[in-house]
Length: 97
Image (cartoon, rainbow, N blue to C red):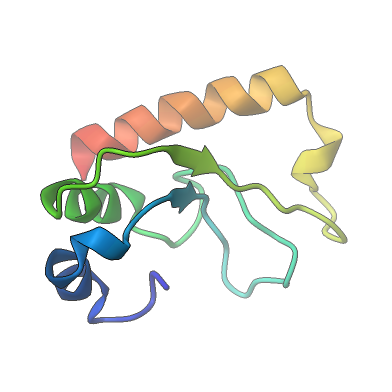
């Protein structure tokens, strides 16, 4: 959805339809099963987090990582490190978004 140029105004117009944020990043070109660590791809995560917050969203934020069939799969990394890195990147995205 992040590529929809009308996403931010639509969030503002329909806050009652926003019930979960799935956060990730992706590189271009992308594969179907390739979500990346926040801040390492093309998604303007901070901007979209602020848009959801401005629309009144205060619910859960879920890290979405799909990383299959790519040479540098996140599935091959340490899960604790992956979570720490993404938590830090998410906080940074919020501050700079």
